[in-house]
Length: 400
Image 1 (cartoon, one colour):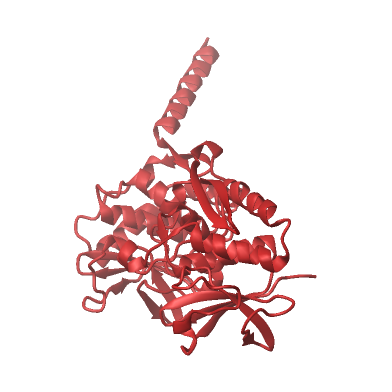
Image 2 (cartoon, one colour):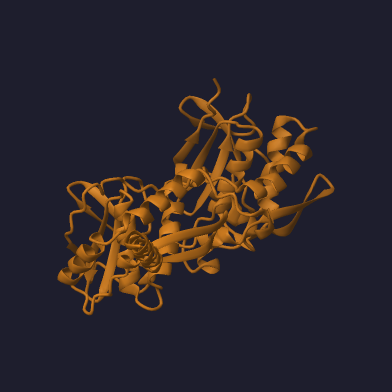
């Protein structure tokens, strides 16, 4: 009898422990690109927001969160990153989503930012915080050539600002941020803005955009599949170096709806005529508008963004043209940057028109942006003929 009572008591205690374990964690579920992301977060990670923003308050928040049961959540995120081969920028988008679940941005921006910083740091990245008056500034170590966002240096290491877009009127020169020093073991990894793979979005999440252009008295029609998530992925993406920029790919469904069609259209043409076709597709299938008029600032669009956008400028078309030529012909190319323009040149077996010489090789200009005159391959706009330029990117096919 005593033994039976003891067993029942053990059962009750065990059931109580299971209930406590279930009540001691919270389930989150949200859409993330390729499907649904499920996250279990222990209740201990819910740390109150600092009442007043200060280095001491941030340190208190960190130590409270650091003593919480956060590791299973980090392990889950890192496993997801590995499974879906997320580049750092896309992994950061996952961190933003998780932080939004834990502490919605609109409710408490400081707490939301502290969670992002903590999650990125505990994922192994060297992330830092600084204070500028009432602003909390979030940085990450990055050793790439990034333009148009603030940075600071510590012992020759460059830290780029990840949240300056949340303070569009901030002048960090007038109000210099001072760092909050919190050493985090294992947080030493540099963050990369390179995007070499886009997510495999769910096919049903795509929309179709109709494109057309006329070439050699024939009108070509396209139904390109595009995903609205692309615009959100690149909403706060900075100005990366041209090598990183030109090598941003298309997503799987967009690629499948465009590249095979282009290949089919140029299949009966010579290589030079096929490149001419791609040049004119890039030039005339989209409306032109300067970034200042379109966005109010300089903004480079990825190839998929250009396919999606109602208007685009020379940077956008140069990147798209490069991508199309690389995918279909894989020819050597260079990018020519002028003070107010960028264009491309392709290396054929024999140059066309007046060649551009670079590293002992001849390249033919292929202008993918509309000009006053209908430029042929090998022709440069008259207004650029005496203007100095820089070669900002050279592509050489890896042909073994």
